[in-house]
Length: 391
Image 1: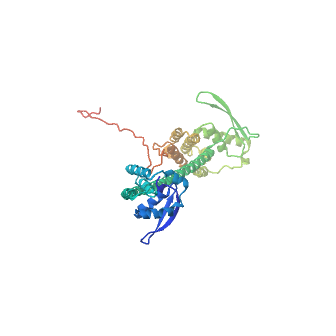
Image 2: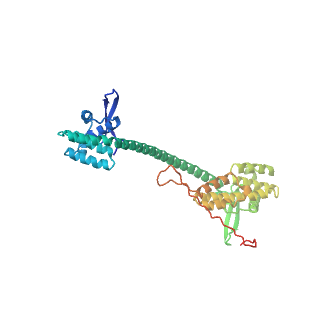
Image 3: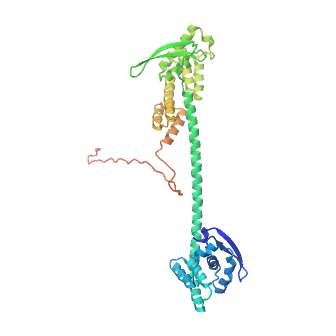
């Protein structure tokens, strides 16, 4: 491993002959010769006396284990290993072996001269190797920083998606709750109790009871019953509302209602609009049914439209809670275009997000490029024969 990729062990300040102060560094795994030769390549100090004079300055930073890793028995062994490393393009390591050979005692002048000549020739290659290592280290650093940024982006994206899904789930649950008409329950002391027989699509009849406690509006009680049993018909809602109203009047319980009837059909219509804007479709349906009873035929078309909107939205939210996005979207589009409110649009957005044909997913390896997979349909060609008729 090159120095740039390893841990710094220590540094020694060296004053050169020209008076310039330089730093000789030792990294983990270096012996004295490798740390010395790296310094000499940078400073162009390649004479033998300087090499021998600088070696003791760095020696105290070197561990015994590092020395053993490079140690050979003779100068010739160092020289041969260095030449092999130079042939392999490892100029810095080859030069360090030649320095180790030169620092061995008992060399004659001819050996020193030959080794020094080889050492000088390794300087350009060692500089190229160090420059290349520095560029690779810089590239690796940039890549690591990029990976860290992408990891942060992925983490932030996941957190944002989780928060978005949580908000969507809360909205869906809340919307479903406002659309819930409740369940049939036996009241202990009902003011009105109507025995009804419902015939299903398969012809099977069911005996049911519509009970009203007298504390809620007659039309609201009838509306909840109708929506609970999927009687999505304006005529049925009006008929049941009228029946409950008549029973309350016969029982003389009209004055005991906690929620009094309004005096005019227009007041019911106005309150229905307010309820619809607030997302209370059940209340809006009940008020329009009451308005229609007070003035025969009043806003029956709007009532039918509102019931259709309620039916589609209720089924769609129920399916969305079960993550049945395709079926939920189909249920939404059963609602007429003129009856699509903000709740409809919000749920449509969520379904489309989960059914999108463009999936941008987390890549298997982190890159600076995002990949998108598009589902494309091949365009059909139309050919013409010589008589200009479609074939």
